[in-house]
Image 1 (cartoon, rainbow, N blue to C red):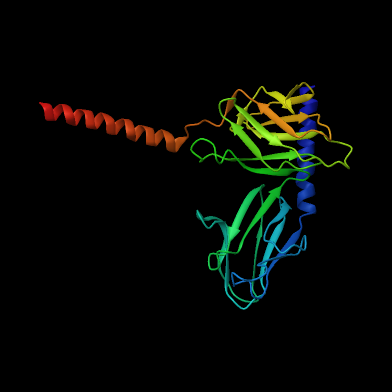
Image 2: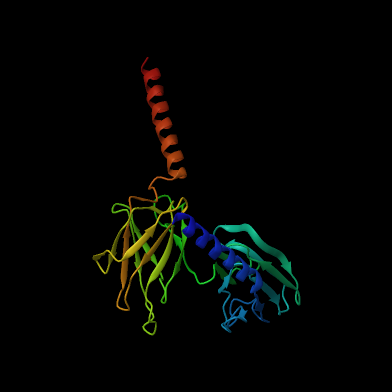
Length: 270
């Protein structure tokens, strides 16, 4: 039975990779004339959705082409204004009429900005076929150094998640699609974010209608929901540790300093 299941999973993964390679798509994001001014009505033209935004959701293997349609030089840098470029992609001088393109080989959430005109910001969200992403879970937990993207399949959307370190739980807000017949949720939870086995609560009521498939890196959960489900809470055996690497270093320095001060006081008394 395990061999059959393994073959099925491998076949599904190969099919997804073939689908992504065959159906990879290119999308344009234009920088219109006047976008170099902070008072411009909009800074981007997203040709996928038609929206005047630099935010776009694509699949693994898709390509984004940023086109400079204005009269000013622009720059595309992956990262954020607050933290600076992260080196994933970018070009420092995109002259008028030129373009820059980048193919995204893996899923994730990739913010970017123009460091010449910092009011121009956007986000590329890359997902696998059929999956959506809840980004940066755990960013405001513990020392803030550990955060994770959670992939999910659901007819509706999950706009946010909240971690409770004491309860070792994550609570998700659910926004279902009332027109959909299937409201089941498939969620891929990184093991470093939360470990199983799990206890599931839907709208504060314990649920037994779920399947749990443990993995080394990712735990898969499939949960039966309804169109009235609003809140999902997953309780695990371990959550993101409160003390990360930075906290341990700071704690170590503090302890060393206390020991040094105490020794100095002893030497002075002698």
